[in-house]
Length: 431
Image (cartoon, rainbow, N blue to C red; front, side):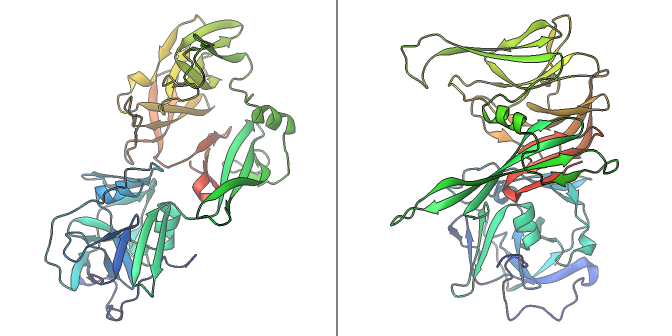
């Protein structure tokens, strides 16, 4: 059922002759009688307070907080501002489905066209222009399970079985091919990417499969010669072979001119085999020839020089196992006089502040609610989190856009953000 309205559910008794917008901004919908499956578990919704509903021959899904979380979304309602929903990529516990109070459901029900704003992955929905508008039933926003919402915005795999009369929704798009796109170099002219394409190969006589790298492709995102605020994708083979070779060997450059990163690990008891070998980790930067210690128990992932001449440093904290770190990005400022300040602790809303680049004298950050230690479960707010600039002169954050899932990010010299989204096999302009 690819590239169609996802998974139109046929109901002979649907209200095809009724107008889309009934008087009083209400519409009549139908509670379906087919089987509904979530995360491979059947949902008995016949008397549920929040059943799926069917409108204009399309299934509508109730976006309750628990259902969103079950299917890797985060949702936030802000009184006076609206509903904010974003894909997180976080595999929440799906062992038990949410349950809701019982209700007396008739075959036909009345839903309301919501008058409040709704934002999906940082974008406002213009409901008046939607062919299948968002609905509100019993105080909950319902989304149509079209290809656009289910597949392209939420990363859900949906399926309709006519023979079994079953509609199913699962988090994560099923595919035998997956891609990983990563930037391996960047300069004022452009950014260079490698795309690694993997394929699942079935094991003969078994239900399992193994993953192999099928091929590797290269392209460049050009920042020059295409006009302000735009960029051009150029498929030109290995645009920077030397940089790719260094990156593939783990020698990714982390600093810039006059700024060097030093990450060290010292094993304290070699008699204990890996990965249990005790170690002490330390990180420092060399700024204009002067070594400045950032801290112990961390590894620096990115460093750049700010407009004030100081070094701004991202670091991840080790859990105690070699190579294993907590997900929160810590943000430090190392001044030329050797003073080190931890900046992320100044912002109580964000436990993770990822340094993604600099332009126009400002730092560019991806700020997230973050994970509480030591459980490492990342929390994300579709309303508070997002992309920001940080002014080194004033220490102020300025929001650019609300939260959008990205695997990695590039900031162009003119201050635009491009994000890699691997599940979509895409590089998209975020801001």
